[in-house]
Image (cartoon, rainbow, N blue to C red; front, side, top):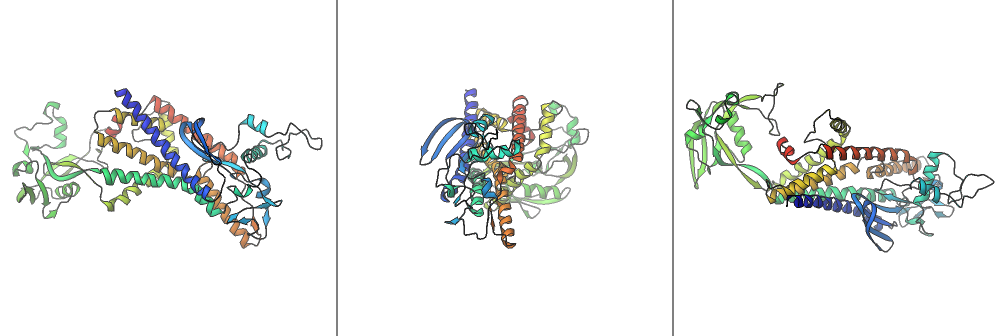
Length: 517
């Protein structure tokens, strides 16, 4: 049964990824169709197609590997003639608000794939699709492209030409104005940004369901346990394990125990300070070490007050995340603070609405910080891969690792159903916010790279108009293909490294719990 539940967890994770990717691509598809761009494919996943159907001019389908997706539309690589064109008036090539570039009496178009790194065919496709029967021109033995222009015989130029040719093959006569590059720059930015925006909105909605709907575990001011004696931390560490939870005759009794505080009592104020939550209660107690204070509480609906001495005791020092602060030799650091001797009741409460924007900001900014420090984290993962470093439970984890954790969450019997659902929602929400942040990196083939190109092109057009040079053609995106291939190669290497480490030295659910994550 555990194995079945483990598999169910992985399947649920893959379904969540697929839905997130599908909605991301739908974010691109909807404005593209609204603006009249021809969209030939809408695919979720990569690799062989498992299922597809055609509606109108668009083929919709699901591919074998649900780790990406794309929509295919003409115009991602403008033809070379269009990029070199210049006109004195911006109205010359516009129709219905689209900034088409007039070349030889029409608007040239190309086709490209949005969201798919492989914008050009492989070497075999290049060789077959780029020739016209192996013909020659003017006696030159160089093969011809479909546009009957000679190959230049140089890898860089031929690669750009092949990419343009491959992306142009699905454009029918008369459809030139329906290309992506024929859109105005603002409309192109809308198409490119809508995909990541969908993931951001989806991530925030999932966080709202988790934090506002299900709620968060909160430490209340209602007493759950009363501690009998106060033992300094340094002394407690020296006692045998069998005596860790027992009191000796000479141990000092806690103020709560002596005052007769009982489980179920709700503490409303200490030293005249109203205590609305456990953090506030703890802070007041720590600040009044060695002082006698009034403690107001409610028992069985009746308000009562007792005066107690808050003892000063040595307690383990913890950081903001609640983890013990250690000395260089590995022993816990301690500090003197006030001690009352009660433990709180834990309840699941909805996060206050005014705190939700801060929670969203913390999540989004945390993801961006993780991306900015990605090179350092990858170095750490490399050290883990070669065995010189242990895996950090709070470090970088790939899709395989997340899938394994999802399987453990569903299959474990140590977590109740509500907590399992909340942990699953947390993973899915974080994934969507990561997809938003990662796609905003201004490098091709990511959406942020296309957005950067659009912003550059818009600025260049404004500068040229200001200088009286007329409307210039679109930026030649094909010139960035070498950089695009480098980025794709780096992403593939990163993926392979994470897959290896996630399989060989995985992060387990127990390790996450023990780390406080």
